[in-house]
Amino acid sequence: MRIKRYQFNGMPFVAIIDENDCPACPYASAYLSTQFGRAFNTQLRKANELLFVLDYFGRKKIDLAERVQSGQLISQKEYLQFHTASAGKKQHDEQQPFVDCRPDVSAKSLRNALSANARQLARVSSETHKGRLRRLRQYLETLYQHFHDFFSADPAIVDRCEKLSSLIKLDEDSLGRNRPQGVADPTDSVISDEGFERLREMILPSSANNPFKGSKIRNYLIVSILAESGIRRGALAKLKISDFQFYGGFDLIKIYRSSIDQTDPRLDKPNQKTKAHFARIPPSLMGQIKHYINHVRSEVPGSDQHDFVFVSEKGSRGTLGMPLSLKSVNGILQSLSEALGFYVHPHLLRHKWNETFDKEGSEQGLEDRLLEDARNYAMGWTANTTMGKTYNEKRIAERARAISAAHQKRVDKKR
Image 1 (cartoon, helix red, strand yellow):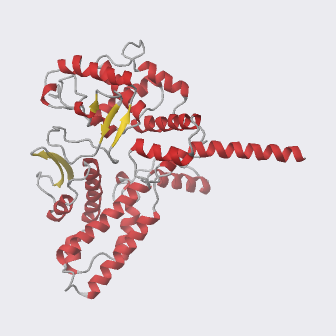
Image 2 (tube, one colour):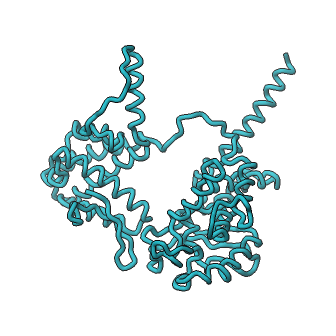
Image 3 (cartoon, helix red, strand yellow):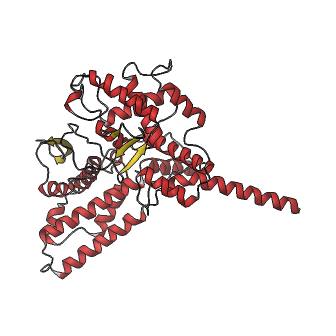
């Protein structure tokens, strides 16, 4: 079994297919159809999680649909075995042949340490593990709803299903979000000011350090918009000419979520993750964008067939003039990363924007509450979001350090 991505009438779909390119399981196809309308990357992630579930139980000769139909479900032992397997990477499955490449060591403590380290390296992230468990639970619940009527189901089967779902849900909740294992100084900048200035200089089309042979103006604008507005990669890739307000203050871009855009020929259709808002950029950058639209983009064949701002300027794969793909945006930042010597990605620029936002807010003497309300709007977050905590950590750590230093100074004077 494998994942297949395809389009039909301009709509993106994902399916789990067999070696004959046919749906591998009608129940799996029915489940995936319930995910239609979500972000395509979300559909793809859930399809991969479901593929893991089907592949695991298929190798165990367990037909989940048959088990649910009969009311047998899966035993606690079978679930616990799946729980263990879902924490590991696919290539470390228990049925794969194991080749021991470790050196011959006699010390038992060293052998145990090497074995423990190998197991740790074979583990997936908490979020990946959690996603696999959630997919099993939701798929079983979907099968149960298909085979058993809510009002006439056998009470014993209902009880068995509820207990299994509760057990899996409890394990899901016990797995938190991915957390770094190292201890980093929260006052450190995600990008040093010196490194950020190097990036800004390097991306200039006229810079001798610019790593791009072509599309220098387009790439400069893409990186500049990410850095100046803090918007996400998906929001940038779906920008249309009509989203730019080339009037008034000459500094606003409309950022919004939309249903599937059938005018977008891309399979992996980008979208905005958070709520609608206006993003602000300097008027000088807005003027450069207008120049790009009128004098660079307009010269690319095929660009007049749609309204998306950033287009492919090469036709090596028949994409000349087509909207720029998310992978191409990643490729631009990858080239910059190699030239700069440190990793640059869209969310890193979003973090840097928030650092700059904090600094400017503090210089203006804004109260914390007002600063957070302004941040929530600029980022497209709801009023009751907790996302700001992610970006507040640096500012809070700096204040805690200053308070601790002042307290220590008073203690030292009393000695």
